[in-house]
Amino acid sequence: MASDPHVSEHTGGAEDRKPLSDEAHSAFTPPLGVPLPPPPEEEHPTSEFALPTGLRPEAPTEPEGSAFAPPGGTTGQTPLPTPVGATALSLAFTPPHGIPAVSLTKEAPWQDRMRTMLRMPIHERPVPERLERGDEETGPAVPRVLDLTLRIGEILLAGGEGAEDVEAAMFGVAHAYGLERVEPTVTFTLLSISYQPSLVDDPVTASRTVRRRGVDYTRLSAVFRLVDDITSEGITLEEAYRGLAEIRRNRHPYPSWALTVASGLLSGAASMLVGGTALVFLAAAVGSMLGDRLAWLASGRGLPEFYQFVVAAMPPAAVGVAFGLAHANVQASAVITGGLFALIPGRALVAGVHDGLTGYYITAAARLLEVGYLIVGIVVGVLSVLYIGLQLNPGLKRIDPEEALGIYNEPLMQIIASMLLALAFCVLLQQERSTVAFATLNGGVAWVVYGALVYVAGLNPVPSTAIAAGLVGLFGQLLSRYRYASALPYVTAAIGPLLPGSATYFGLLNFAQGHLPQGLTSLVQAASLALAIAVGVNLGAEVARLFLRAPTIQEETGGRRAAKRTRGF
Image (cartoon, rainbow, N blue to C red):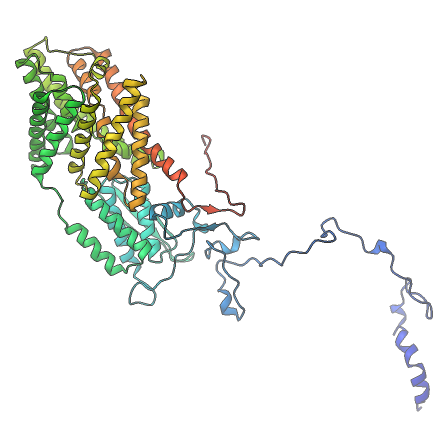
């Protein structure tokens, strides 16, 4: 049967509106010909999470990715800009507004830049700059970079640098040559560094043992300059190895005879601080030079450092006892006190306390244990001589420690003596000649502050020592930042006039005479003065870091990320 085209064309619109079957009918569908009513407002409720009227919606956030996913450029899409300070590990956990930016400008000292990165979580550290530093396209070989890092850390640790600064130097060298996920570890005798190429690769670990320790601040300053060139100037690995070899080949700036003379000058100047005359100065210098030569002889024979301190402490004590027995007008206490100034391990004590305050407790405990052994060696050497002297002359003159520290007050003479003492310390520490004048002046300032607080203001010697040492640490830190060098050459020699030589001597003399309570009191005072020096130096350095501009983690509000306390757990 043929269909009528006119009918089909006339009814086409109605057929389009009819359902194809009865199953398509709905009870809510209006009949044909009835217009649809407007939708009620209740059918479009407002969500409590909806954006209020008048506010512009935020841009869509970046979808979370995976640390194992290929980079955006491999999928044909334009990769999004990486936030400053983000790494491959942190992209998966990046906040909506990006992680805090880290300002690591090359104008800041490398110690501050590397210390800032060390104290950051590993997933927030900036990616190192991928600069071509060798002939290979992929950069220098990882084992060679780790070897160079360990060699630099060994020189710094053997020279007496703090564990935090050693780790900062090691991290800076590795980071400068493109090693991103690297973790250095420093203990008293062991250096290790671990590098993981990626999250799925096995880590590469290297270590090095520090067996010999020597005091050469000229070499220490040269290593600091080398690290600054690596981290700031971008020298190649071959140039860095060449510079390190030159540092190792360089001889000490002062010969051994100059060190012996400096030891005598130090002891003579120290005796003048407690009221010694010209004869006392000469006696203290002779005793200290004899002890220094004996210590060199013991070192050449391979004796441990403990016995070297025992034999070095005996000649000053013997000269003091001999002058005390022969001449009643010569102060034996001043002679022996001057000899003790050249032996007290103030450098190791300051380094040990600094490591403890910065959280390196294993290294701090080892350094303080070393200080304890050296002090015991001094005690054994001095006590053995004092015991013999007391047997020969039981009436050997003894002065109360508090009276001995207060009876002599000659400001001009003591300031000159303190500066001579600091100058002699500079020679013993093998410092560069450019740093000697600053350290000598810093030592004079330390004694001026101490003398003003003790003799003029009447303050207790312990807080006075801490304040004077704090100024030494502050000035030393400022000078080191100005010259982009280590602070040790400006600090260690300057604390020499503050060392507790008199209290140590009177404590030992009381023990030799059998007065244990008085001797214990004097030794406790000496320990308190030594700790006040160490804490004061560290506090002065931290004050300098607190108020000077340094690279920090910058939040959106412009503040600093605060440190967290463990609260005992």
